[in-house]
Image 1 (cartoon, rainbow, N blue to C red):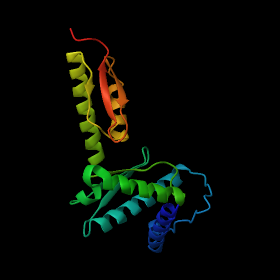
Image 2 (image 1 turned 90 degrees about the vertical axis):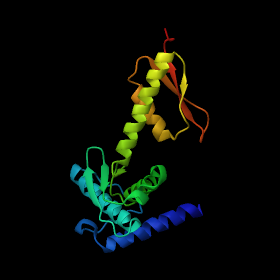
Image 3 (image 1 turned 135 degrees about the horizontal axis):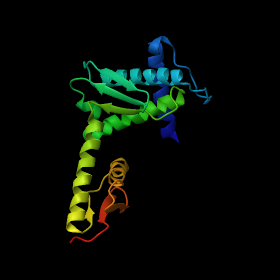
Image 4 (image 1 turned 60 degrees about the vertical axis):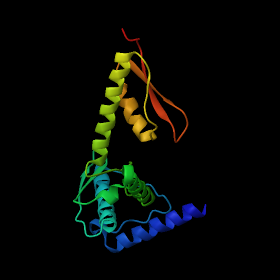
Length: 196
């Protein structure tokens, strides 16, 4: 597992550079032995603030010269990032944002900073994507009902499929199923009644 070791070393190196700057006025505690600490709401808030600082610093390093603002929401463990030119931090189809989210969650878990998965949304990219996917799913569900035939959607990742399954679970006239294997896995929308 050489790859895992290099990831751990990279995370440790990155966190060490952050520790020198004293995140939130306190050094992050080394938790390489995976000691568990009781997470109170206050600890969660401090942890989420620390994660937000890691995200802010990371994005400022990725998008050189950009001023970044972050907001946190403890109820859903979301960190919202705002700034001018953050396209590179989002990446094609949100892949850079997803990679950053993965890394900060690794750091959060390894350093026992947070006990829940942190979600990152840069310039409302995630919110807008969910809205777009949901609207498309509803449009296709109505088409399946109107035409009385199944509708196959384009291949998509598990995150997008989950959004569609959840959105269409509220429709009593259709059902959804995932079909095929990755990377061609797609959703099929089936009408429960034939068209009149």
